[in-house]
Image (cartoon, rainbow, N blue to C red; front, side):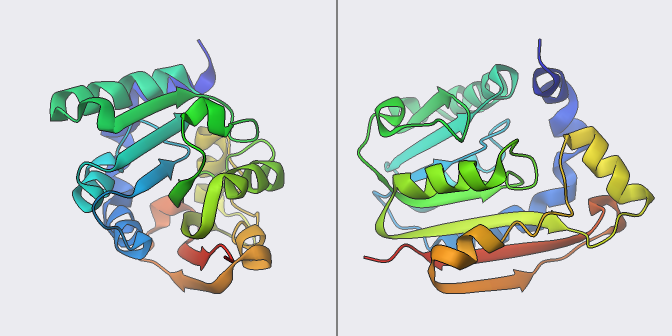
Length: 203
């Protein structure tokens, strides 16, 4: 069992409550509408699924994650909600995920929540995910940034196997039209400043 598979066992009860308002902000920024196809990567335990499904209705939600333990939790949420085949889960690394894995040629929205700071290859993962976004599609990144690490920042990095000193909005800023980065509500538990970055893929 991998580290994130173990993390999945207690993630919802110990960590999830720190990111409630930020998930709502991401939902609004995605500019969702019924029928869209959304890629949520990393999907984690599926905590963003209710927010995304509320916006796309019977549209397709694709959740990808490198952890089978996280995906098992996400599948349970999907089954309990009765979303059926409108939610499709894929076990894959973000840097290697392909359209054939997803079963669609491209997606309309890309949601990267607490992924950029944790991907083993941040730039490679983003470049690959960006390639799956349809022209004109919208990307939303939510993450944490700390220029220097205090005690809590070091704990966040340790527990999430992340690096919150990464300027993790910059890959999106380099390629997107209408790029924007806004601060979100942050608490000491986040270890740094929460931000939301958005941009559109050029047509």
